[in-house]
Length: 418
Image 1 (cartoon, rainbow, N blue to C red):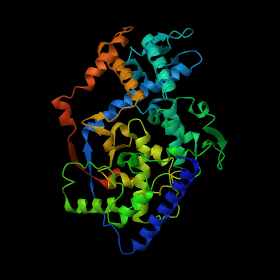
Image 2: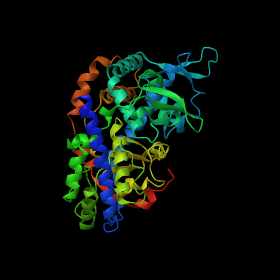
Image 3: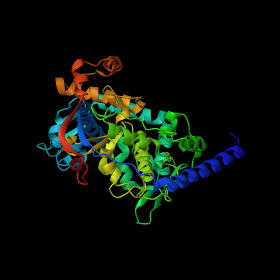
Image 4: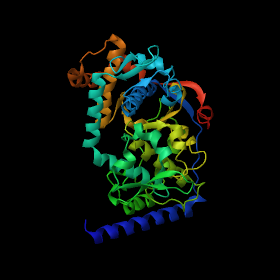
C-alpha cells in the first residue's frame, strides 16, 4: 500500500466511523437495549488457573528481585512486608522455602541467625533463557506496548500504572528505556513520569477482534449495520444455562448488532450514557485483555487506567454484565478479570513464547515442592515433560471446568472494593 492509498484509507476510515456514530445517535431515541440482570457464576477451571499463576508470578517476582539486588540475595527481613505486594495468601518466608529448586537458603555472612536466599543454578539458567526470549521477541514487545498507549487519550500512561502490569503484558524490567525510538519518558500534567508514544504506528491500529473477523474496513462495517447486522461480533461463551435463556439471547443479539467502534478511534464524541458507548467500553476492555499474555489481569490494574482509557466511573460493572465475554474471579483475596475466549478446555489458547518459558519455571517450582531436593539438574528434561503435559487432560480436570452457580449476585461481585 503506497502513501496515497494509506492516506485515502485513513480518510475513509475516519468518515465511516463518524457516519456510524451519527447514524446510531439518530436511532438512539427509538432503540434502547433492554438489559437483563445476571447472576455471577463460578468457574472452577479458570479459578484454578488463576490460583496457580498467582504463585508462579510471586516466584518470578522474587527471582527478579534477587537478580536486581546488588549483593545477589534477599534477607528474610527484607521479605517481611512483601506478602501483599506479591499477592500471596501465606507469609513470603514460608512461600520461598517451598521451592528449594529455585531459591537456596543460607545464613547471612555477618549475622548467622538471619536467613538469606539466592538463586539456585537452575534458576539462573532459567533467568538467562528468559532474557533470550525477550531478545527474540522485541518486535512483539514494541507492538504490544504501542497498542496499550494508542488506546489512551493522550497516548501516554504513568509509569506507576504500567509497572504493576509488567507481568501481565510480558514486559522486561527495562521496558521504559529499551526502545527509545518508539517510547520516551515525559512528565505528565500531574507531575508523574509517563511513558509516551513517539509516533503513531498506523499498522498497529487494528484490534484483535478485527483480526479475528478478518475485516478491518469501517465502510464494510457500516453497510452491515444498515442491513441490521453487526460487522464484528464478540465471541461469547456463556456459563451453563445462560445462553439458552430467551431474554439473554435477545439482549446479546441486540448488543452484537450495534456498530463496533475500534479502541484505537477517538470516541469522545459518543454519548457517555448510550448503548454505543457501552459497547465501546466492552471493546476497549476486550482489546486490553487480549494484549495480556494470559488474557487476564487484576481489576484494580484496569481501574488505575480508567481516565487514560476514557472509561466511565463504574466501568467494572461491565464484567458481570457480559459473562459470555468476561469472567470475574475472586481467588487469592483479589479480583481478577479474564477473557473467556482466551482459554479452551483449561488451556491457554495460542500461548506466547514467554508463557511457554514460564511453564518451565513452574515445572521447576513443582519439582521443588514435591521432592524438596536442592541442586537437582532437571532442566534438560523439561522440554519433553512439558510437551507431554500439554497433550494430557484427565477426566478430573474436565470436571473442574464445569461452571457452577454459587448464589452470589453481580451486585456483590461488581462492587468497587476488592
